[in-house]
Length: 351
Image (cartoon, rainbow, N blue to C red; front, side):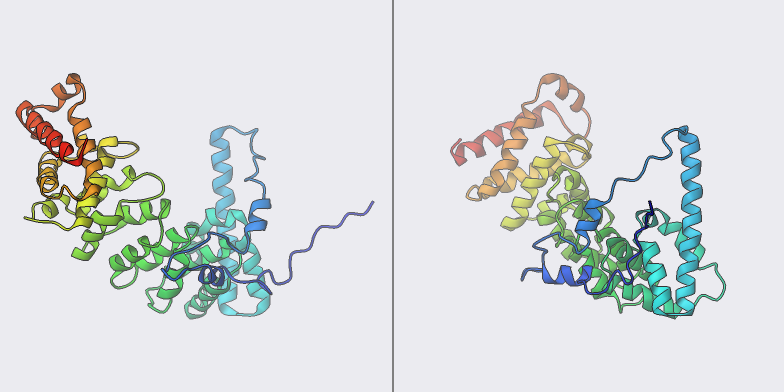
């Protein structure tokens, strides 16, 4: 019986919306994505997980084989891209596109970029144009990711809007961030992008954000720590980068900062996967300043969670407090004073 191997699609991008177009179409008036759908979702969902054909090998052998395979693929991808840069024919574009569509191509991005610039005869200007085309017109996510990775090698502002828009989709945020980092006012761009994502992408961006302006620090304390995974992932980072202690030392603060401080302290006290309240060296003065504002802002219900969390923290068992007192500025007297202050404030909330 004859068997036929399915032919590769002639032009995989033809007649289909690009990932970029899909993101623009699904962006609401607030600039945020209304859906995480992408044009290749059906193909991506149908693909089996990475094959475990190496299951019979030892871990060391498997690692060696995978590294060798990644290096070989990286060289092949680099040659295909270099060939495309010399001759921007549809034939060469198709060959590179099909190679980049492969799941394995993502593992080879770093080595491929290193190998690419060592090849003779590379036309850097043409390569930029093809990278821009991949990011703008690519239908398949791996091709788009590779296009953004290539663009990150160039400091041009020309592709800023393109990668920023792609970065709103969490599939591309990490790649977009790398491209934006090479541009002027990178911190502002990363902060702006972080406003549009809410999951792991926001966590990634905030952790790498340089808070070089007061606007960025203000956002970190008011909204930056909030995410769909767990606020505890970013509470400590935002408290430090946003300079929470300095912000609370003001005579009066606005309701959004009060609500943000409440959220950060609640998350630090709950604890979780990242640093918690006992890791936060400024815990004592920050709690004191927050309670000072809470006494004056009792009409702001957003502060209640923070006060309740602080009270629960101060009421923890004596064994924990024996370890805390004498370090970080805690004393028995201060603990008692803060706890009495919390109870007084909570009584005004109608506890």
